[in-house]
Image 1 (cartoon, rainbow, N blue to C red):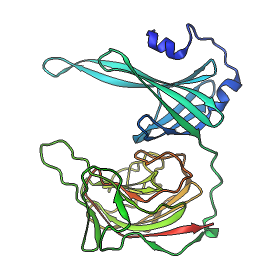
Image 2: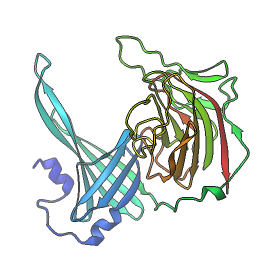
Image 3: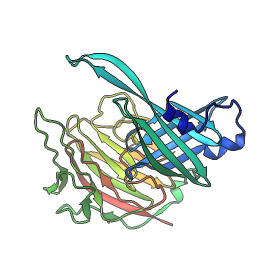
Image 4: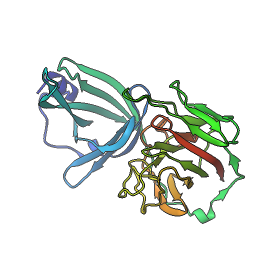
Length: 333
């Protein structure tokens, strides 16, 4: 076994016993702030006779980890990635598996972690420290018939970008044309994909009801982020089997119960309610997600903290997309 791996374990040999008190503090869900400051998420579960976990690392989907184990009161999580080795003719001659190791120690409701990533050329290991906060248990599903909403707030005035700003310094394709909030993400044929900025509200909100209309082009891809952390997927998925990456899904977390999307190029309506970490999504008049629990942030979240107020943010980094009639009603507590 490589010396760096043994050093990370802090042992010369593993013992075969483990006291429940050593691993129980690690079980559950953790809101991570990963190296570089991005949002992540980790779940550690105890199965019958073994441990398992899932992870979100910045962007993309929630995925299973490769393994979970404990030793000397510390948590160890591995993620295995495949590396293709190519010859002079660029053909694949060998596939190798590289193991990344995450090591954690819990201090109350804080998880301090260290990351060990072997360099792909086999020379050296990159190390980084990061941390996570324990996510409290979910409350019961709210009785939405008893939730009171405040006066409507028109987020898009149909004239200009007042109340909105880019999330970063990438090229900005957002503009207003004929009362429509448009993202024009121009791509040059034969060149690498050009990533455009996302757009967020200046204001930040807690729980709310949000209604809007959206129009995606063929193969279009966008997203509506609630509180800046939960993505309601916006994509051209008409005619596809149900999936957690389809139109109206909570990206990689909650699959719609029915398909309700329209073909690309048509205006589609959303009615989204977020209350007590539970979400309801009505797409084109059909309820496709009914008061379901949110286990954590999704890929592309601005942060992983589910309890701080956040903006509505619209994804613009993939393709062009149009929005209009964006109205929010905050929950009255």
